[in-house]
Amino acid sequence: MIIEKLALKNAHIEIKEVSNESFRAYGTLITDYDFTEALNYMENETSIPEEGNIYKASVSELENLPLRNLLENGFYGEMPVQTGYCNGRNSTLNGLEYHRGSEIDVAVTDLVLLVGHLQDIKGGYYFSREVEAFFVPKHTAVQLYETTLHFSPCKTCSEGFKCIVVLPRGTNEPLENDKSKYGDKYLFARNKWLLAHPDREPLMQKGAWPGITGDNIKILI
Image 1 (cartoon, one colour):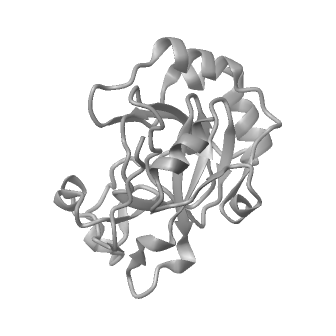
Image 2 (image 1 turned 120 degrees about the vertical axis):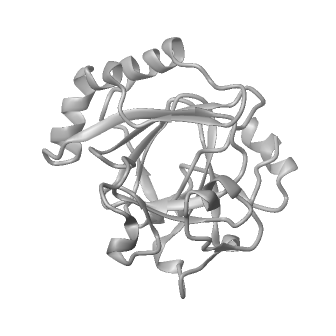
């Protein structure tokens, strides 16, 4: 099994099944919605970049599916949402973000999520040793609570990963004003608060708060 192979290569962090009871502190499995059409689009119409990740917050082909209205009404209580995706080859923690409102992640491929608790940020810093890793099998949908710190999925094979991402509409768009106006060092984009690992220079260059201490955890494959 893939998770067993990952466990052998990652003695530095325990990788649990997302069905493990301990995931309940971070989110829950979503089984009440049919993601088949969205998964088919992702598998047939999107690609994985040769390097890094590609994130698209809002994709019309996904948002035109009946699924969007079902999620807006039944899951988000008539709140407008955006449906997009993150595909890539990431293997490293790099940062941790949170939003006001739950995030839905649908694993198009197998992937690993690195997560933590918002309440474990102390004095402006979060220790990476608090991070937990969960293996999410392909075609599994999960809700991440708004108090769950998270960032890019990690790949489980050399080909990379694909993941559908559903969020309250407008999340991750650029701020209209300079963030210094709000006096919030974590605020990074619209409805996006971010702590970065200092080793992640692209985030540092964009003004992210270097709030993660300890190792920049990497999932080995």
